[in-house]
Image 1 (cartoon, rainbow, N blue to C red):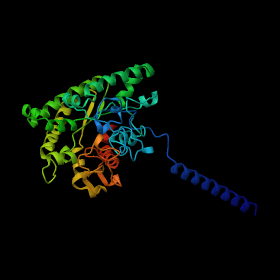
Image 2 (cartoon, one colour):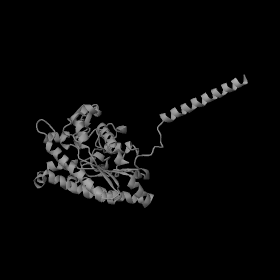
Image 3 (tube, one colour):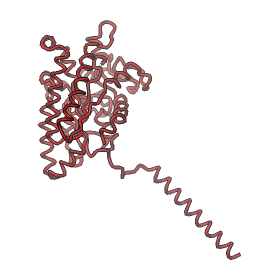
Image 4 (cartoon, rainbow, N blue to C red):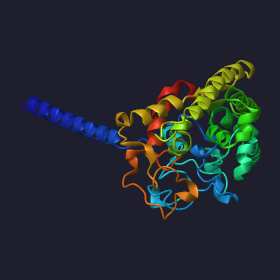
Length: 362
């Protein structure tokens, strides 16, 4: 009887331990882990409005979006200067890689050491590789963004030391996203078209982009995702000005984008063979975004030829303001205004790109 009593006690105790273990295991799985290391230590962005979180807020330019209805679906419904109803691509890159929820603008924000060290965006909406593109709209040209990056490096060197900063930059993901505004500017300027054919102008942009990338690598970047140009001709605004009475995609804009993208891919391979220790990779957004537009139902969108703001055809920046009506549910639209994607389109695009280019990001 004593033996049976002892065995019963052991079984009862073991069951309690097992139940406690399973309960603790369930709790551990149910709660998010804070110990997961980010895929990269920092994300640093250069370029145009696709990755500009509000740097233009402090510039004397009309290319701004720090007013309603921009930011309508952002946290707190705050217009931050992001050209979207909510988050932009740069934010989703940072959050999906586990770095931080939002990628802040370098200008106009009071950033502490932690925010600086985990990355910022130097991008300026309206800029391009062609100096004329940024000169017309009074935004920050690409070369000037590199000057601000040098300033950023000096600040971090003083706080982290040169060795730590070198390690930080070598492991960080750099994003360079420009060229769309150059396409629009080219077809808005008859003199440009007279002096350059499509192939010639694409080559001019490649030379400018290549100089920028070589300078960036010289400043410590080692892992650089270089974003190609999307199908600019299918943006609502370009359908209106270049798509004819039927409002089709403007074929000449898309031709320039494709020509540039093909040349960019070749140039990045050349640079990789010459810039030892660097990893520059071409990021194809053209094919994904074209599929969003041509087959929106595949991705849960309902409208892909018009923007959510106003008539959806020409409204952008000041034209898309508090006086303009907006659609009820922006997530059903590919475009927020006549030029920029909605938060949902940005999110889906970055999900697909991170999956596609995971090996380059590591």
